[in-house]
Length: 464
Image 1 (tube, rainbow, N blue to C red):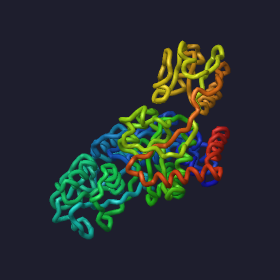
Image 2 (cartoon, rainbow, N blue to C red):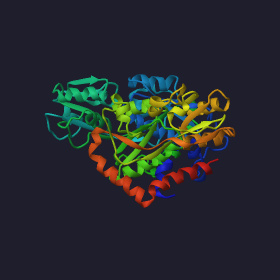
Image 3 (cartoon, rainbow, N blue to C red):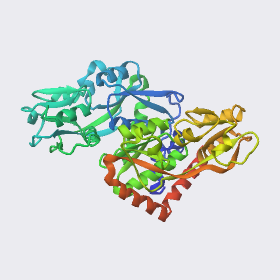
Image 4 (cartoon, rainbow, N blue to C red):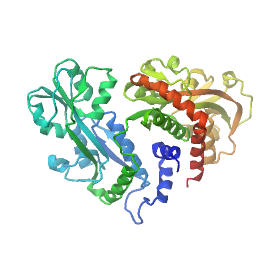
């Protein structure tokens, strides 16, 4: 499999495609396994952005390779997350190697998967002080800030310490001179500092600690531990757990198969722009995708050209990458009499359905409107005669119609909307825009841009 296909498959394909791929490579579920295939395994965590999203992505991929589903639930309290995992959940998303010695009462029912799901770097940050970090003792004479509930910090930081619930609060205290240092995981600290646009807080050297983190499973799932260990080990060999590459988190509410096309193109563009890694997180909601990209993420995968005019408040911190990432083609579908599509006015007297969060449709579609979170329900209503039309992207619609054999549903021409879409990147990464534009232009010139779509289509057709 070439580099484009490899990046595409591992970034965002649904569980069924992961399953097909890894039957070939021998990581399919063993015969006689006792895992519950219809169950969603619930893991708890108190880790904030971006670690929370990274853990969720890795756990979901590991479970998808075993034909299983998993989700991550966030609670602000690290101790409560551990208690929930130990008592009623299926596990904890990530804990240090010696967590059972640190917190025996809250881990009695938990088993650590031996291969780490993540390796993180613990660093010391300061605004007004500079000194070599030669171990925990080097913090003794300073007023240190740390995050509440981080057991390794609570156990080891000496001297005067202030504990706060979030990394952002710590960074603000450090910037205001109310603490001398902040001790935090590097990924979380760097993300918070960039998000606040601060330039005078610096990381001291060397690192305080490099720490592996392990997925923890409840003992009732003991049979899954060796299988997950094998999967996570393979993911590590493939470079999916490499912390050396800077990772960007983009969000989208776009459904398959368009989501996989966007994931492949963005990953390739970021790889060319600086050997960066991109992870596309599906939110299930176009509105939520935009909010998360604007408030805590690195960007949104694809939006119409005038999205900043349509939704100025939730795009205030987002900048358009001015080279298109995809072509949006909204068609009108009907199961009734065909009619000519001559702009929005041709829908004025009909019962029209479209997907929640499609801002351009919310702004312009006339008549009686049914707006739902997903297209599958809309096409079911259309097929049952409860809607006159559904307006949706052709790639999404055609896949749904074929899957459910909606033989009465027809695509009307010409398309209602045919225009380019653009990725949005958070303004904290504005300096990357020229390199990303250049990468996308090169991809279009050398055929990579089109080939990614072809590979997604081919993968979907060949999947069982």
